Amino acid sequence: MKELIPLPKSYFVRVRCPKCGNEQIIFSHASRVVRCQVCDEVLARPRGGKAEILAPQMEKLGAKSY
Ligand SMILES: [Zn+2]
Image 1 (cartoon, rainbow, N blue to C red):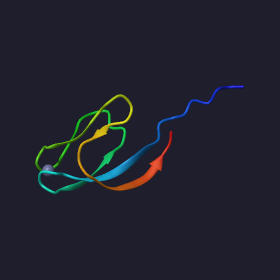
Image 2 (tube, rainbow, N blue to C red):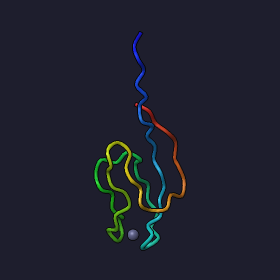
Image 3 (cartoon, helix red, strand yellow):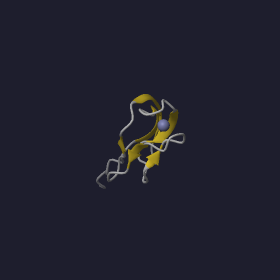
């Protein structure tokens, strides 16, 4: 019997830029630095699997598994 490897759950999350208040949707497992589309503030940065989300999270938008 195969051992099941738990896959990291990924999801999208709406965050608010702490600097300018712009809301945008970012991926929980972003593999690149995510910047605010308005002011270029760093909102999330990759850290292994799950991204480190630096901005306040407003709402989680549906989980996706691969
Ligand atoms: Zn911003």
